[in-house]
Length: 120
Image 1 (tube, helix red, strand yellow):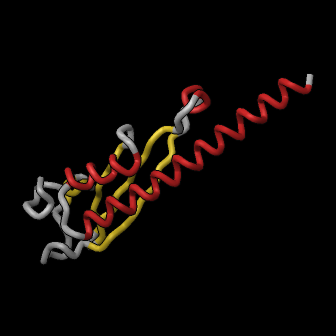
Image 2 (cartoon, rainbow, N blue to C red; image 1 turned 180 degrees about the vertical axis):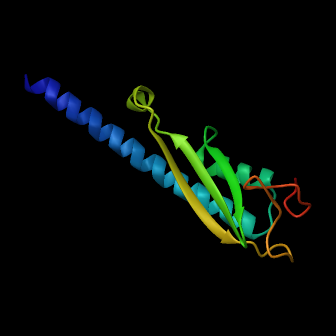
Image 3 (cartoon, one colour; image 1 turned 180 degrees about the horizontal axis):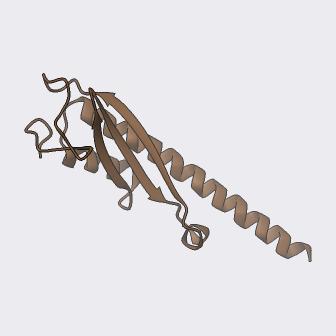
């Protein structure tokens, strides 16, 4: 009777640690993507940097809000428990839009784009 309880507890501990590691990867990838934006990188460069840091399944979104740019990275928790429970984690990092001489990059529907600066 004790063995099933121990196995269940171990399963939850492993799922929690997988979620923690995934969250740390996403936060580092969001920071890396924001650094690329701060240096004036394009959307393709941001996506490449995020995928190198967070993995190929990570989803990246870049948005502008006034003079600020944000990179949001999200991904599902890996493993058996992550497949059974739709558990999606995300992280966001912000940077000032200083690469162009404008107050902010053009925004269309909340997404940065259609700008020679941004490489679209």
